[in-house]
Image 1: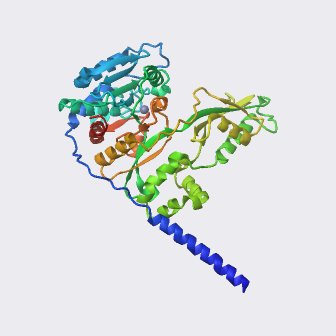
Image 2: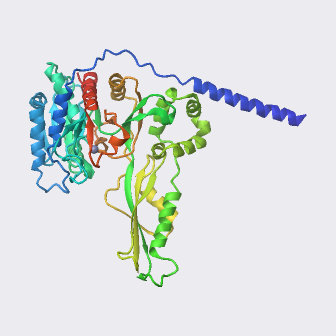
Image 3: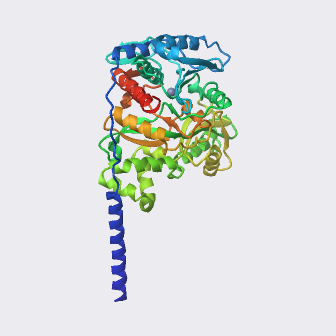
Length: 484
Ligand SMILES: [Zn+2]
């Protein structure tokens, strides 16, 4: 009898739990988009494509250090000033650390904090081999502008400037100051450019309303049970470290090998690093991302996410498995990328070395990642970090007028898209601006195919012209919503 009562009690509790979970899922409501008076701006596709093509033709390849001859960056800046004459006439220009530049377009209301629009002038190198066109030819073909930097990121710079040029041409004047901050070494971490710009602004006592930079992405929602496109705004950046693992062992001739070899031990260490992944966890940006997406998901996903507190271990496991993208949102990733042994095939090397590329999640650090690898590979493997390690950035707030306006602008220009914050998994200049505002956002307003995205830093990089027009509308509308 007592057993039956306990059984009924357990059944009752389980049923109650299921009811609570279902109710929580049903309570996930889509936000009200609100009213909008947006109508798409008339942008000439030919003109804006030609402006981008002209920018691509100037070879602003990142210089290894700031003492090189960077006169090509002055040529590039002259090109921008000739191509956007109204912006140039309205702007006060300040060169920073020789080649980085701020164009400050003054607003009429000094009580408003300036907005900073970031872009980098530099591009990664490209030699002609394997390209269908001259990588610096600025070729326009089949609805695309081809060339190095056409996506990363002269397209965003041209769209951002053209958006303001169009508004000035309409005779309108900004109320809020807009600072165009263009570094010249983003592809080498931005320490000569973006970092110096942000230090300069800090020294002048400048605080910013918001920062917008490249990053973020537009995703197909299918993998998360959403039948729409998702526009992701990067509110933070993962940290970065390259750890070199090194194993020393007696070298010699490979005809009489020792029981264990340096290469064998290194391979074992690399295998352990790959196998024993760091634990996934919920960070502020991943929680915020799934909170924003949950109301739009199919019922299964919605049920799971609305009950994240109950189903957390299961959910984490699923997200780590479902795709490399959701996996890297949830944890620090460690990818073995390089390995080196003897220089000839018949020699046992005295040293074997390998590199592990780590992208560090919010809440962890370069040092905690090093300690984790130490635990995994044991004491016999030497671990050192290459130059360029950086801890994860702070996380920007989504509870700000600037975030709400950015979200509004995206839903106006890209109708039907769902907007969510997320942790940006690559690196950009934006990480250097957290000293000036709590609102550092990354968004690239161009939808792209996976194939086109893979051309960034690769062969035949190209920018879809239709998207370039759409990106220009995005910036124009962003200024209207936040600065006019
Ligand atoms: Zn870039």
